[in-house]
Amino acid sequence: MQKAMDVQRDVNHYERLKVLFLSGVFFSIIASYTIIKELKDSLFIDIVGKEYVPFAKLFMIIVLIPIVLFYSKMVDRVRRYQLLCFFAYVYSIIGFLCAAIVAYYGVGAENTLHSYVYWLFGWLYFFYVESFSPFVLSVFWAFLSSITSPDGAKKNYGTLISWSKVGGMMTSGLAWFLLSHNNGHYGLGMSDTMIHFLLMTLSATLLLAIPLIINIMMKKVPGRYLHGYEAAYQFEKNESKSEEEAEEGMFAGLKFLIKNPYMFGIFASVFFYEVVSAVLSYMRLGIAQDSSGGTVSGASCFLFKIVFITHFVGFIISYFGTSRIVTRLGERLSLMVMPLVIGVLLLYLVFSSSPNALIAAFVVLRAVYYAFSQPVTESLYIPTIKTMKFKSKAWIDTFGKKLARGFGSTFNIMIAPLTGAGLILFQGVFFSGIIGIWLAVSFFLGKRYQRAIKRGEVIGSKDVENAAHIAKS
Image (cartoon, rainbow, N blue to C red; front, side):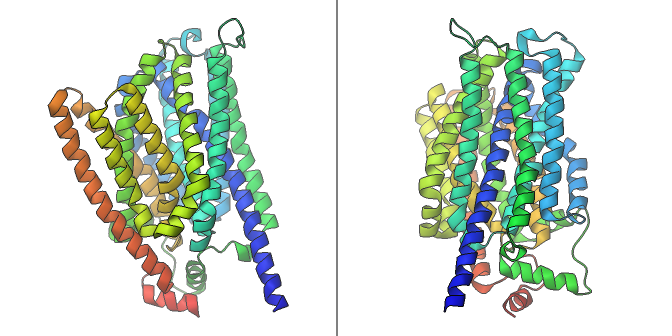
């Protein structure tokens, strides 16, 4: 009895320690990403122009091809935590270089070189930030799902999200303060260029904390507490000892994505959200441009204000609701929350299409997704094989998301000439179709996930019944 109590005490201790380290990593990632994500929009609008945003999102799909192929090769050659550390270093270095370019050339009215070089930087910075999510944030989620059990996801994802929201609030709040208090009698007296340089440098510095925290965690937490879903761990361990080779290659993840209904369902869920988000985000940029007074700092200030509010709302949801709601509803019903919320928000926008209503809908959409829906969706990867967790997820988070945003951008281009009843009818039919299919996909995913966990199956194995037997033996 005493030995069992000691073992359980060790499990609880190392589980808390693991959550603490992972919370620090997530804090750093979101704190860094929050800065560059909003600067990307304001800088691109100022340097290139808002009208080019839809085309940039479409072109981004082509740019990602060599990166995702390189990533797929790395998955076969390095350990999971090393993959995250590598991309953190790479994006940190690029971030410092971008900050140096801004310091040299200036931004907005302070720009000293109105030429193709500055215009090219606007495009390159856009691509840098757009690739951050699939190759830093998504790699973190893949690593997290590989070392987290289903019960651990229910209990701890709310805590992890809460810390990420705190990171987002801190950096967006700092940026909002600097940009909004720079002018006037009691202003800080800093140039727009200096503020943007400091924020970009802070973002790059935060990324350097990620490898440090990860390496400390790997030393402090024993390997047996980093297995995650035990059935998947035992199955992959057995596969590595057998003569049969694991699924490797640059296109292995794409093959699983296309052939496996479970992975295609995750792709569909991500796709539907990104389409709606792209439509509302583009409208938000128009409001930011109108509210900025024609300056890049004005646009940045407006965007950081909105994202601060979004992180705050997300913190409230994640801290008080995420774990409790998922535990009460279960994964199947929890997956259906997001399409229902979007349906309510779109209905609200039909009757109130003012700029404030659009911003409120955008805040709720992002807050509910990142604080509740995304962790539930990410937990779907837990009972899958490594190839699905990393390679298929990479295809979903690169081409899936970018294709969805490109689709949303195309939709924005198509509805630009429409007004009045025609616009409302077209949007109503389009979004009703998305929500209806999304609900059906969510029901299927939740049912399949719960069945896999109950039976100890490993989704993606060539013989799920055999995988379940291996896990139990």
